[in-house]
Image (cartoon, rainbow, N blue to C red):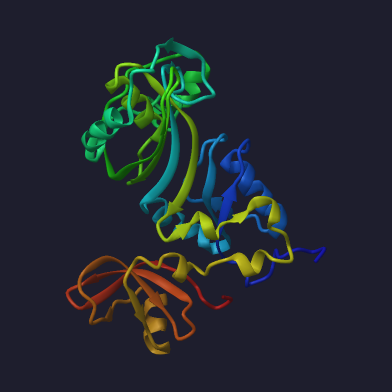
Amino acid sequence: MANGFQNDPRMLGVLNVDKPAGMTSHDVVYRIRRVTRVKQVGHAGTLDPDATGVLLVCVGAATRIAEYLADEGKAYRAVLQLGSETDTEDASGQVLTQADASHITREDLERLLPSFTGEISQTPPMVSAVHHEGKRLYELARAGITVEREARTIRIDTLTLREFTPGPNATAVLDVECGKGTYIRTLCADLGKALGVGGHMASLRRTAVGGFHVDAAAPLETINPENVLSLMKPPAEALHGFPLQAVDDARRADILHGRAVPTGLADAPIVRVVDANQQLVALALADAGSLRPFKVFSTEHS
């Protein structure tokens, strides 16, 4: 095991990692690089350092599907603390305002939640990776610069109140299912404003990304050279939400050379094309009875 997996053709897939608090997503990628001895490692959607839960880490050629995994719907469990606003909208920031939230009831919050469900407008926080004139907002925030941000339309599929603890600093446990680009700490801050007492996100745990759930995630500290291969999902399985088309060797060769092949599938923007061994050959567009590959994977060594 001393030489690691640098030239091991099996070292290709997606790891469902339970990220601990206190680490950046890049820290997790670095740790997986050390475990696998593979340079080509990346994640499919950043988690803030204080957040925990599902972080998908792609190894080897699986990094080429990271963008599709990042587009998947996500689920979170967040703790909203009422009565105080912070400059980062979470517990890591400086307190800006304080108020007594003793009069806020569970029913008050429950009545508010439907107006924050569906397609809603949200302004990205300053501490975020959104670009502004060539720089990321968090870079400007670190320099003490605040700029106007344009509100964006985001999608919240479900917003459920699980627990409510009343008091001057009332807290609420919320389950959120949402689309890409949703900032849960901004959601918490906006809920606090709507209740008239302010609020911030006290903690966050990502419970799912697409079909990957936190119950099946491997705690980072448990991943080692002995078990890492068994924890990986092949790319074709990781993209299980997309239609599937198996091809024989002749059509596999056509696909690998970028040629369209016939299909009985309905039109779809992304189709997984697999060979007889269920290895991912390509991602293709299904259009008018043809599969047109737009991202090809060599399965020679997989």
